[in-house]
Length: 532
Image (cartoon, rainbow, N blue to C red):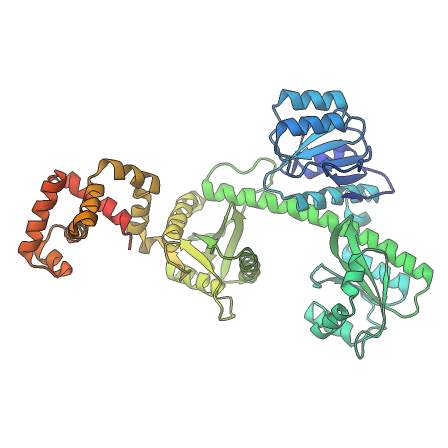
C-alpha cells in the first residue's frame, strides 16, 4: 500500500521529523536529511512493489532488529527512510546499514498506532506539497475555505467530519434548502437524509475518492448537491457539500481543488491538535505524579484556588467494541462536564486509566460527597444506562503538591471498586482505606510466598482428606479476635467444640495460637483466600 501526495514544494526528512517532534517520530540517523519526502508506503514482504526515492517505508509488525537491518540494506538508494517501533537506537548493525545504504532510520513512539502515523506523516507531507507555509491553508480558516468553495460553484457549502458532524459552512445562505437549514441547526445532516444517501450508496462513492459526486433526487425537498471526499492519501478526513444544480466542468474542477486545500487544513489541524494533546497529557502526568513542568511544553496546567480531587476511572473489561463505545460515551460526558461553571475538570487517559482532577466552583460545596455526585452523574450519562466504568476518588488536595497523594488514593480506591463483579457507584478512598491497605498487603505474589511458609496448606489437606473443618474454624476464631463465644455462634457449634478444634489445629500443624505474630500472618492469609 502506498499513499503519495504530489505536487508543490516537498518537505525534507529533516523538516518533517522536526515538525512532528521527537514525541512522535525520532530520527535515529538521516544520511540524507535534505532528501524531499513525497509519500508513505507500508512495507509488504513478499511483494514486488518498490517504493519511490522520496517514500518513508513503515515497517509494521517488524519487531526484529535483524529484519530492520536487512530492510535498510535492501532499500538503499530506493527509499528515503524506514520507520519502525523496534528499539534500534543503539544497535550498531542498524546504524551501519543506514549509513551504508543512505536510507534513514526513524523510530515511532510506542504510544502512537500505525494509522495515526500514516495520518500525521501525510498531514505534514500534504502541508509542504501545498506550500502553505507555517499556517494551514495559507492562513485561512475552514469557514473562509467554505466561502471560497461557495463562490466557485455558486451555492452554499458545508464541510463535515467523517461521522457527518458539521465543521464549517459558507456565510451566504441563499440557494439553500430545508436539509441545509436542519444541518446548520442540528450540527449534522438530518437522519432521514443521511439514511437516504446510504441507501443510494453515496457515502461509499464519495469514499472512493475519484472526485466530486453529483447527488440528485435523494430525498423529497432536497435540492441537488455536489459532494467530494476530503482525503490525505488513503486517510479519510470528511466531506464537502454544495447545494447546486447543473455545475459546469470548471466549477467542479475548482470545487475539487478547494477540497484539496480543505484536506490540507484538516490534516494540519489534526497534527497540531495531536501535538497539543500530547503536551497536555504530559502536563497532566506531571501534576499527578509530581515533578517539574515538561521542558518546552509552555506553561503547566493552571488549577483554580481551592481543594482538588483526583478520580481514577477504568472501563470494565467487556467486548472490545463495547469498550470503544464506553470510551466514546465517557469522552462525550467529560466534554459536557468541562463546560460547567460549577466544576473545573482536567481529564486525560494515561496508560489504561482515565484520570480527572476536579475542583468544585462553590467552596461551600467542595466536598467528597459533591465530587462523587458529579462522577455519578457523569457515569449515568443521562440515558438511564450506566456506563460500565469503575471509579475511585482520592481525598482532597489543598494544592498541586497534594495531587500525587490524591492520585495514589484514587488508584487504590479503584482497585477496591474493581473487586466488585460489576461497576457500582464511585468509591472514595476515605470509605475503603482499610480494604485498600489489605489489597496492597495481600499482593498475589506475596500471598503465593505465604503459602509456602505458613501451615494453612496442611490444614487444607487435613480438611480434604478427613472431612474436618479446621480451616473455617480457624478463620472464624481469628475473625472474631479470639472470642470463643461469638466464633462458636458464627459456626453454629458449642464453645467446647470450638476449643477442642483449636487444640487439634495446634497439634496437627504444630503452631502456638497464643503467639500474636502467628495469629496476624494467619489472619492475613485467610483474608487473601476469602477477601469478601
